[in-house]
Length: 306
Ligand SMILES: Cc1cc2nc3c(=O)[nH]c(=O)nc-3n(C[C@H](O)[C@H](O)[C@H](O)COP(=O)(O)O)c2cc1C
Image 1: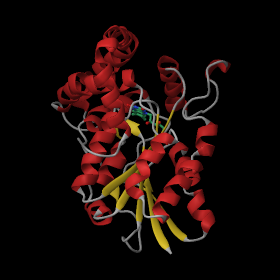
Image 2 (image 1 turned 90 degrees about the vertical axis):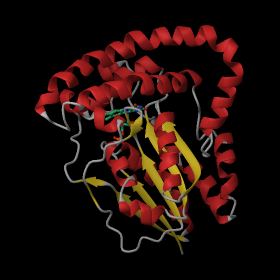
Image 3 (image 1 turned 180 degrees about the vertical axis):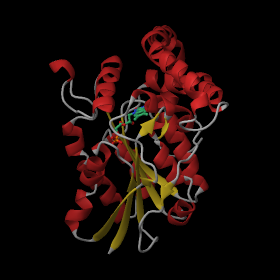
Image 4 (image 1 turned 30 degrees about the vertical axis):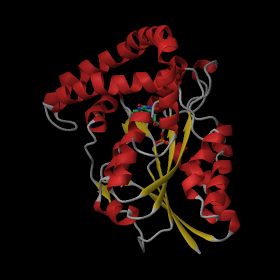
């Protein structure tokens, strides 16, 4: 029996559902033992979110500062394939997922093992994935596949619906006419097709060719505008704001309250005013950047580090 480990953290259960559906082909074959290992923070992040807590998680997410987590409850730490499923918080892996990847247990588990990343996010993930690529590399793991399930709603609509979802916990249509928030039920149900591809390539010892096939199957799609804006915003805006807030202390520290609140006002402004302006600039300059856009698309859909 080959042994598969699925490590994940999900607040609403959306990513848990993705992980469960993804592993169905392995389960059905009967040749695998699958261990599901949810990451458990000692003080969990409350879901649905309250306004202040949502923004208070920003500096630690962006600066990759871990929280305390319980060690995964595993009888044996030796696996043949690791599925590391994570969602993205502020263009960074969710704090509990990052806390695991920084742990000593991850060092033992990932060493010399093939790793698949499986993301359940809204629409901005390339900065987080670049960081995870580096981390897996440092841990001695071999990242062989990446699958990204994302919200299909147009960017601004998606911001409205994900906010409704994160602040109420409800996955129905906001005001009756917005699309359902998050990843569509159809995409969640069909993720087993990607599981099937991974299983075939794993069984045929062709994991080095896996990502090519996943890209063909549209398991990863790159939106050039979003990936450009995301990289710029992370470096020029997020890191600066995070540093500014962190000067006043760690999570829940009352002395940073004012700065967290300032960020809470700035954030919607950036999304609603700055991002659309950047979109116009992106469109104007796109014809002169065709080569770069093509190169970035190829690079970010792959699993290798630059
Ligand atoms: C604090 C916070 C920040 C988020 N930031 C992003 C982001 O930068 N990019 C993105 O695509 N999704 C973002 N999301 C959405 C999550 O990636 C994810 O889709 C959602 O939280 C549902 O995940 P769950 O399975 O843990 O419930 C964010 C969610 C939270 C809670």
